[in-house]
Length: 116
Ligand SMILES: [Cu+2]
Image (cartoon, rainbow, N blue to C red; front, side, top):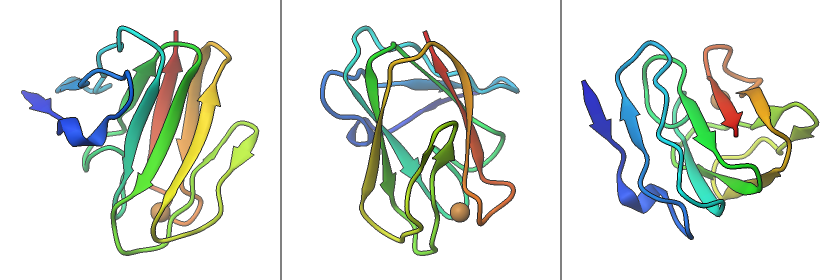
């Protein structure tokens, strides 16, 4: 299964990312560091289903975009967004590695960010 995410989810120099239907649901590596938009839905990051892994180049700014109706936050190692229902939260990923990002309100709502 291959799911193409809508191009409108990504802006700047980020390329369209393609989710591959593996257990890890790895996303393709954008060619350039830029801005990668990440959907904050009810109650999921990126898309419903298994925990997504978004892979970006070091230096990429992740921009979470609230798209649902319920309150969510974006919490990772060393950062925490406010709880909100709309708007965005951005964080530049400068350190390489794989990081877990969660919403503390919804225990099943999580994603991995792989910075390469
Ligand atoms: Cu949530």
